[in-house]
Length: 451
Image (cartoon, rainbow, N blue to C red; front, side, top):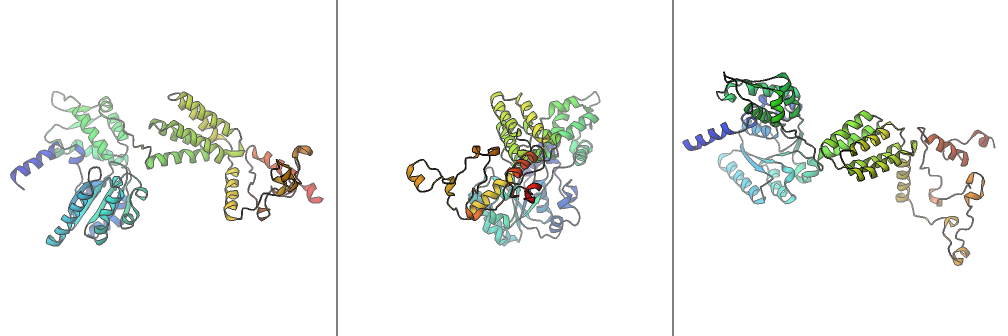
């Protein structure tokens, strides 16, 4: 390194964002992720033994994916080659791999190829890495915020260990803030800044487990604070509010999108209106598609509430139509009303289970002909052939009901609908048991059994 190179590196280091200047350089300096980096954990043991396999680090922004990759390279004395999936192509990958091959042969030094946002690589780009990862020419460390099961090709995924990183705890973010404010080297000769308790609490909250966002927001808040006569800076909550920008990790095509709608539906199913409203609020705050939410409510009304409250689907469909007509901000009220109604309603999945059983029978058995008495007979020829013969018009009988066997022979006796015992559905079950005295919807009435 020349004198100019050294100077350029020093200037770049001083002008780098606070989060970059505070990047840990050893395993012990990394906060959080003790589930994979704690003493005795698999990844830490592999790093310390210099037997690191190819890895996929999966987690939200600011949780240390790049930092862990760099520390691994440092501890194992490997060359660190960083590739951004945003702007790298197959040629860049092949160039990096060829250099790694030569480095290994001439110096005996292994290479870690770090691919940031590996989920942005297409299949051909990932395929270009595969042979050298398999042969051990390079150790791949991929970083992704998306589920690698969906974004990384199977052959590459099978040759790498996936480690999931979690958002940092508030205590970890507080510790980083304290270090940033008190470390003389990080202050670079500037007087120490202090935060009011309210300002620090807000900074920790908006960081939301993202160390990068928390530290860079702190840096901006301190820079925005006018020093007093003695040069000290007191950062107030107003300064933090002006400096930070609320950051949403919600991605309408990412994991959080699916996780949040899953939580929403499961809390409706679990009859927890408060939790359902919370997840609804999370989606609304993130700008989720209103019609997507409304459609899910319609589905829940049929799948989870079902015949325990036949009015539920009317409420959900009415909400869907109203949301389409009204839009935000008033649509939030409509969605909230439908959410509370469905979450509070009795639950039954009997119709959902019944159609699944019927579909299984259709797929697993012969498609026998429709019984003659149920066939359409619009012409004399069809009538002469027996179409419709033996059909009993239900309205000609007591209770508007006539007992007939209405399925093909091969599925007779198979039961699909089992009436539930919640809400309105017991009344449905009672009527069916009264009409069908063969016990198909439960035990036959006592008077029928005596007959």
